[in-house]
Length: 133
Image 1: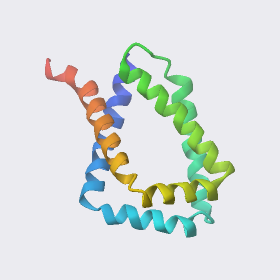
Image 2: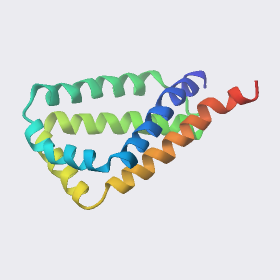
Image 3: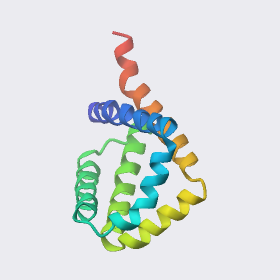
């Protein structure tokens, strides 16, 4: 459970900041999606999925706690990240095309809501125990 709390303390505020950044500068994210077509052919775009894969693999293999909803959600995020990283490594152009399609369909609103809710939950889960001290 201690590892789950630590991960929640790290990931929760990061997700809240990401949600805030979407609210403050939505046009940046739309421009980022539009620029993915050019970015997919760069070295950095080929390295990021490898780093994502290794990070999610480490999280999936080292985090074995299933004692709380937060712990289960961390496992789901780790395994989902492995799937996403694998798709980015094997089919980068297809993943970019899907991301752009979802962006045009207004999926950024869903990303904002999920990012805020999960970030708020992880932050509460990670830091609520400190309030009682």
